[in-house]
Length: 53
Image (cartoon, rainbow, N blue to C red; front, side):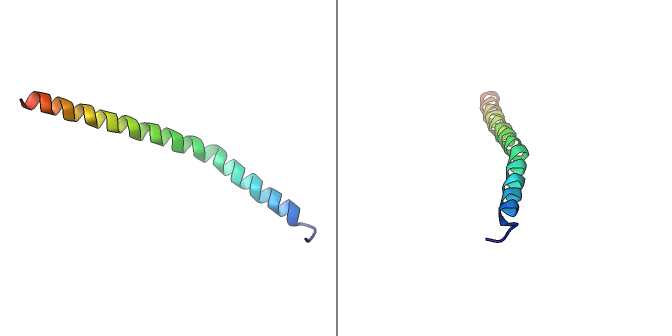
């Protein structure tokens, strides 16, 4: 192994960790929004069926 290889590996791992630190909460929030959208669509369909009768 050359002299700078451990430093390079450490920098790459640090970069990946920092990217995951802000991307993962965005993905979780997006999933929550999508689930709420599905619930709202289901409620809209139920109300449409109710008022069509």
